[in-house]
Length: 321
Image 1 (cartoon, rainbow, N blue to C red):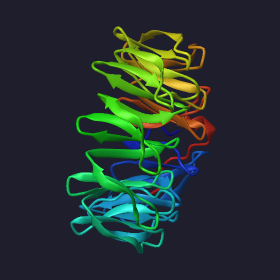
Image 2: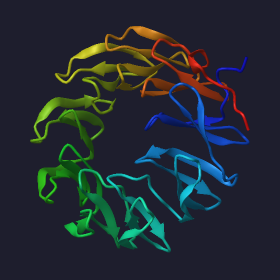
Image 3: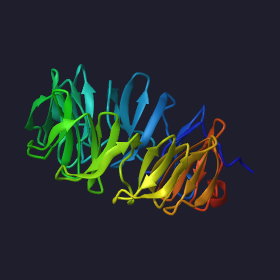
Image 4: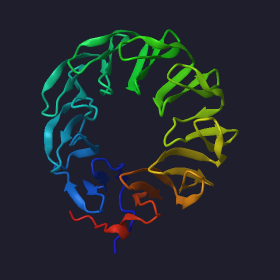
């Protein structure tokens, strides 16, 4: 009988597969616990989850992309690379960044000092010491005149002007003025921002919905946001009500109805009411994706279902080299 926590490293599930790694092998499990892919190249040191049917992987100092047979679909050649998003991936060719398609062909030639993934039809790029945004055709639709920029989410992107942060729309208009000391992406219609030392939440018009009184705060997911109140973490609803009392040493975002929280040095999972669903027994824990969450005991990782059952009980098979 194999141990239920077998791996040195694992990823979250994406596109039906999760990366698993031992000292000798890298592969991918399906959601039934069966090993579907063994990476053929023994030089591969790290591999990411699949995105648009390709998985970013590193061999030596360079990156390429694996297919679902565990073979190189796009050979190792890039000094830096991102996972695919909206059919394109930001990669470093030589000293500059550009974008390739799923066949590994240059769509936007390397010409940027930095580049991030496409989101909502825009990708932030750096030219010199300024940031702007591209469209998928490679046209700079928001000029490179910002101090910094981040990805679009819900039609808004955090951008830095001088020393403060505001929000752009896809046309490049600063629709929420740059008046914040810190700002983060929109989620479920709200964005967390920082004024001085404290966090609060604004809506898409830039109006305060939850005043900046919090020591730390995360984004809203499934109608809940993890917040630090005093020395403990709890959860607010979108009206600013503390719906799960602050009693945790750490609290993560909800996903698939459950959130990983830490108490007395151990992680477990709670539901939207704050009730324990999985008692705190693990040394680390990730979010639920596609019905499974990665969990760690000691130095070993495995997977847990929402009932707290480890993947061995759902058909996990031992590694077969």
